[in-house]
Amino acid sequence: MSETWTIEPDITMAVLLWHGYRENLQDYEFQNAQLQPRWQQLLSNMEQEHPIFLQQLPEQRLTDLHHIQGANSLDLDIEFLAELSQIQYDETDLWENSDWVSVRNEWENKRTQSTYLAVYLIYLDQQANVDPTIYHGLDVLTNNIGNSNFFANFEQHLDNYHPTQKQFWRTRDGNNDWSVFLMFPLVLIALVIGYAEFFMASSWNSAYFRNGFTVFSQKYPTIRPINFTACIPHLEKKFHKRPFHPSIIFKHISENECAFKEKVFEFRLGFRFRYQVRGIMRFYPTKDVIILNGYLSWSTLMAGIILVFIPLFTDFPTILSILGIGLLTVSYLLQKKLYAEIGETIQNYLD
Image (cartoon, rainbow, N blue to C red):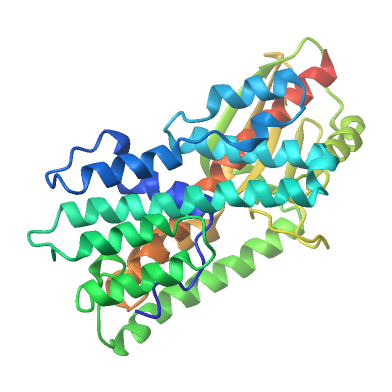
């Protein structure tokens, strides 16, 4: 099963797997009595408090983290990881402290490995027949949690006990070369749409920024008119090179409209989520209100369609497709939070 771990799982992928498998997973009731105590041990690993709470940080930041940690919902778990990254970025002593990075990685590895093994236990509980010797293998894996070779051992375990049952990780076997030709037109259309969208965004095409499928909309009352041209430098400074966020650039496209998007060409080290939404702020003088809208990009819509259909017609691993859709969801949730912050910044600028 060499294709199982094409990408080494990390904490974000673990969160997506946990919430994507079933709601209220912590309340799952096992039919197999031998799996229940092993499940409880894994839950205990996953419920260990993050080491950030042992650091000397501003009390308000730690209080905010406490409110969202362990909420058992996808959006709050992602918000926790994003807020954690922001704290590490702001507290440069942490970011540059090798001991802290080691402790953090140890916690993340343990949480990630426990999550994958926990979901595997649910898979086993739903099987009609389980090899009695598998329980020893589960104990070996459980004792191996925290080690760097955990996923290599997990893959070997899957090969030993499920050599012909790849549906836990994949839904199709064999070679379907004909399916490549079936998917080719869809991929070609996506590339054309992506190129067209890039051109319109780069040229600040007003029709492109004013219309689309709305995925974010918020009103912000104001007591005085806004001069978008004057506030753009303030906005671009505030939303420049943030962790996990590309820099955001703004442009005054009409008297009462300001469009904004991510900066595409930007040299920076590290991982960043690429956004799927373009934004526009409109000031309505007669209503004394600013409305901020976010429109889903066409290329993201096509990417979602491809990720849904590609496992059905090709040998592309289903779990990678699920993770791809999950990453798009995470990116949207982070951007939704960012858009709300942009709106609040405008409102505070006017107050």
